[in-house]
Length: 358
Image (cartoon, rainbow, N blue to C red; front, side, top):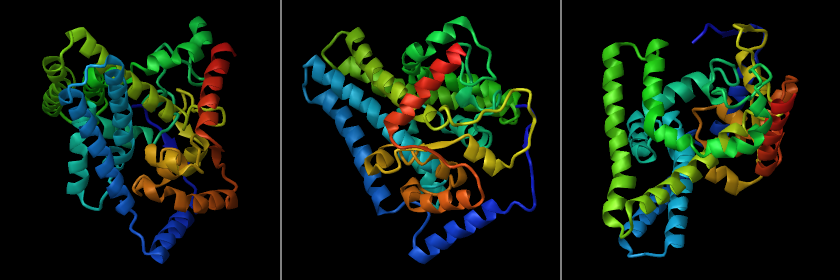
């Protein structure tokens, strides 16, 4: 990873003031910053539905293909919800004060097909510190097929990217559950995040075991149990992966790759703004007034609050959002948001269209 640093201004006390105000809120309300009863109930409900639908698919005797495909698609949604709510908070240490509890809640990530150690490097360490920085933030890595900012090279086929984006987003989970983690081991070893060759080999072996468990649970066992040809079961599995891929990718992109968010060019190593101002300039909220969206997306619609306070459980974001917004306005800092999820999605695809043509 290239050297990169933000401006430091000793007189800029925005974060000190904001932290103090948020801390005061929790003290006055006698609240813990981690998970509460609502979060515990959601955890039990999501894991229960996930396990219940899996058992229903395998052992209920259902043979209606339409119903089965719908159930597999529902598993894809539940994978997304579990990943974005429970495991995301646990990976940030925001679910519980206990490291053991957070680690235990990361274990079921095996059933989503993702390696938590790689996720923490890519998401917690890199994305959270350098959102929308070209060449560093992997969430906006164009992979040749996309142009997410004006600093990325435009190719002739990018004029169609707002059409084919969903098709490629659908492949995200398939890549994630097969080769991506292995590729990241090599990359992060080369960049120094993984300290030794032995550690890299050990992690790769652990990843291989976890991938085998994932594909055993969701592909091998269903092929053996269900009364259909293997390719029909494989198609059901693909429906789960496609739904999860499209849903999660679009949610991730609507928080950063939208018209009002800033991007940093590849050749920039020093930026004239502070870390917290960069977070506000490159991040956008959406659908803040929807309790349903907030619960299903694990508070990712409160992306500003999440980037400034990743160690606070997402169930508290609606309560502190007013503090964050008023403090940002007091310091004349941006606070970007879209009123609905749909307006954020529309903004993302309109940006893809503009970047493909301008």
